[in-house]
Length: 179
Image: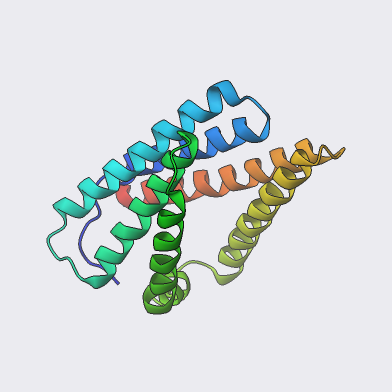
């Protein structure tokens, strides 16, 4: 994989976290806060990723493809929130960039852990917890829209599981930096 150090990692994570909070507010029908938070997060993600790309020394086809993917995704969200037409163009462009990314790098990006010395069982358990958390967020979101009885507890459980995974990941990275 890449040997070049990625810059702006923490600000991008903060922007993505803000985006998730905005989505949560949207799901909970707190739209007065949701739209500005989502708009700010999408602008931040677009600008930070473009800056990260600009600072990169080696730029290949996949890096340009990722830039197109992130930029079109951000612009699509911004255009939707501001009710500006022509967001279908960004949806198609982002979809094509995503398909190209999956074909050329996605599977190796998601599977390649050959250098990892973690316990296979612990790794499997944490990844399973992350998948269950994401599914709980999706199911909780959909059932919240449908106003079903156990939607909110399912949604909150999903967010707790994903937050635990992210915190574990950050703590492991901090411990590895100290060693």
